[in-house]
Structure formats: structure tokens, C-alpha cells
Length: 139
Image (cartoon, rainbow, N blue to C red; front, side, top):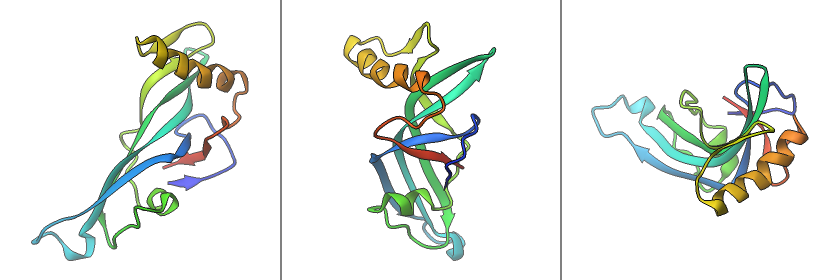
């Protein structure tokens, strides 16, 4: 992933670095020994999306994975994980979304309230990075 201060709506994520988890793994022989290392992990993220002209604030999880790395990654360092050659094809898994009128996501009132506490001010301050998040990151 790459960090930038320049925002564009497509594929940009603000990350809660405190939630980043990553587990390294090594491919067994006869896998090509040059590309033997990998990792799987996740990080909580927020992002914006636009649909039918409406901007939406989204909250969820960004899956982090890389297979075929030439060296192991220090998984205790969030920046080392994020700057590894990660595959971003999966994108974010949205668990809550606010479009300024309606909420979509969790049915539990506590989770919904926690989502809206982030998403409402996030949408109002578009395209600012919400407090507690680091961004903007893209693959």
C-alpha cells in the first residue's frame, strides 16, 4: 500500500493502525524459494464511495494479504506490513454505511451507534480523514 495526502474517492482508505493484525507464513517446498513468504491480516478502515451521485461514508475491515514475497515482513510494525507488496483485490468489507439520510449495516443498536458516531461526522467533513485514523492509503 501507499500513503498519500492527496485524496481521490476511488480506492482510498483511512486506517486505524492500532487494529492492524498480521500473521506471517511460509510456503513449503517445492514452492519457488524466491517467493516463499506471505502474510494474512486485517485492519479497521473507513472510506468514501459514490453511488448514483450520492457520497457515502463506509466503515469496515480491510483484508491484508500477500503471497509470494521475497522476504519475511516484520508483522509487529504496522508500516512494514502496509508497505509490503499487498494484494488489494478484495477491497474493504463494509459493515456500516451512512449516506446522509439512511444507515445500512449492523442491527445491534450499540454497534449502529458506534458506526454512526464515526460515519456522520466523517461524511459532514468530506473528504477529511476522521480523527483516530491514518490516511489516505491505497493499493
